[in-house]
Length: 382
Ligand SMILES: Cc1ncc(COP(=O)(O)O)c(C=O)c1O
Image 1 (cartoon, rainbow, N blue to C red):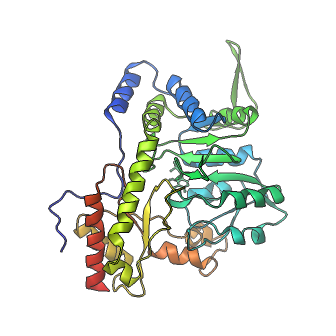
Image 2 (cartoon, rainbow, N blue to C red; image 1 turned 180 degrees about the horizontal axis):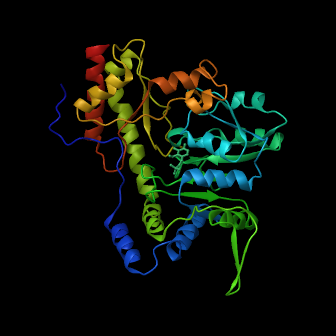
Image 3 (cartoon, helix red, strand yellow; image 1 turned 60 degrees about the horizontal axis):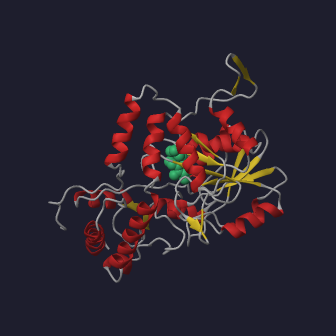
C-alpha cells in the first residue's frame, strides 16, 4: 500500500499568514471587535477589486444570497431557477424568502447548470436565475446574461466558490447583476465565516446595509428608524481583518491552485484510474480559480462503494470531501415532490463525486501521493 508515514493530508486547509494573525491580534486589542473600521476597509478593498462596484459584507454566504434575493424583490409566489448540484443553502434561501426553487439539470461536461435547458424552465412566475459556479468554474456568462435580458429576469450569481475566477479576462463579480460570494473557512478567500454581495448601485447597497442589521437607519446623533424587516447578518471586525489579509493574497492563491490542478492532470495521465474510467474535472486554466478538484468514480466498474473508496484513501493518509449529493433528493425537497430521475446528470454526478485535497500549502509531491493512492485502489479493486 502507498506509504502513510507522511502526515495526514486533509482535503482542505486555510492559509492564514503571520501578518493577518498579527492584524487580528491588533483588532482584538483595539477596543472595537464587532462591525467597524475593518469591515469598512474590507468592503472598500473588495469594491476596488471588483472595479468600483458597491459591495457589502455579511456573516455568511447563505445570508448574502438571501439578502440578494430580497434586494431583487423575490418573494411569495415567485420562482427562481437554479441547479440541484450545489450546497443546499442555494435552494434553501429561495424557500426562505417564500419563493419556489425550479431546478435545471447540469451539463455533465462542466457540472454546472446546463444553460441550453434554461429557457424551457422559465414560466410567467420566474423572477430570477441563480447559477452556481461549481468548484469555481463559471457558466458561459454571455449566454447566461443574454437569456436573462431576453426574459427580463434578475440574476443572483451564487459565486460562493468563484472568488478569483474570471470570464474572458474579467473578474467574476466585476460585471453582471447581483453577485454573491462566501468566505467560509474552506473557500479560496476566507474570513472564517462570511460573505459579500456585489451590487449595481448605491440604492441596492443601502438596502443591503439595512437588511444586514435589523433594517435600522440612524438619523443624526439620537435619531433612529426601522423601515424594512432586516436581520442580524453583520460581519465582525475580527473576521473582516482575516478577510482583508486573505484578499491581499488572492492572486497568489489562485496561481498556486492552478499549478496544483495542472499537477493533478499530469499525474493522472495514463494511470490505472483513468483507464478504469475515473472522470476528471473540465481542464480549464483560463477562468476557474480551482476551488476544488473533483473526480467522478466509475461505480459500475469499481468494486467498492464511494464510502469504501474514501475509507481506502483515508487509510493511505488522504482526506477527501463530498460536494455534493444532488440536493433535490434531500428529504426537505422530496417532500416538495422532487424524486429520482428528474435530474439524471446531477444524480449520477452527486452519487459518484469525490473531492480531492487542494489547498495552497500542498506540494506537487502531495498531489503525486494522492494520485498514486487512487491508481493503487483502482488497480486493486477495478
Ligand atoms: C455553492 C455554495 N453556495 C452557497 C454557500 C454558502 O456559503 P456559507 O457557507 O458561507 O453560508 C456555499 C458554501 O458553503 C457554497 O459552496
